[in-house]
Image (cartoon, helix red, strand yellow):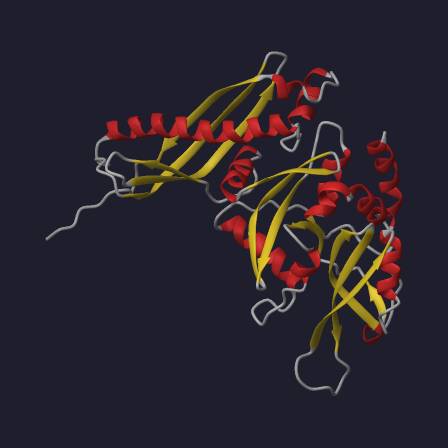
Length: 358
């Protein structure tokens, strides 16, 4: 029922806009951190204000406004009362929820955020492993505006290590509010202002129930056919050496039915590293490797899906897929079912070996 109420509210607030003000009169808020302790919400605004004409040094200053309140609305108002300029929220890049907020108080935060007429819903949401305030205030010379840095880090990670998972808040909100779906939100930690992506948080309704590490997150991206460059799989050889393949083109489908879950798909991969004694000039070698790596891939996918079953999270949208297929509102039937696999792995044989001519 709560999900339905939220869905009915959304159309009325998405069109909100902020009144025009002169740039010099605005405090441009790039990011917001939200913590909760001692029965109060603590908010931190990351503010970028443009210097007035004639002032020297950099054109922008970044500073922080901290406040608290027994509701999020009061905390936001208290922060605004500390500012000598009009708070401008339309450029908010990121809202950071502490892990504590993500576990116990996200429903109150979402209720406030979707009702606010000043916040556009095109920002991203992330989770701080500890304090949201500490994360958003981790500004350094290399990342002077933390909110922008977090978004850029997610984008770069997508193109390199493929463990990031980021979507606009509207998509995250849709996943939270739709029956048979749940959200995934990236998780960061900070140590002495060094910011690190450590994985992705899986939700059940409004509650963070588990954090998957970066390796598991890359498998989640593979399963979801998220736009990624490659996922790496490693096999250790008898001589303690290893061979690594990288997926470069895949199409994975999760097919639920009344008896079991079928994971079916194709994966095209290339050998990215190998210190084993495999003869890569022999076509039979690839047949052996494809069989062995298929088992490795299936095992890693199986570990993730079984964990999703254990925490009853529909972050992979399996419950919704089952409903769309059968129109039966048993969104958690799949959590009690066995998993079968039909993965067709092909390892590219071209351009992988060369001879040194002496």
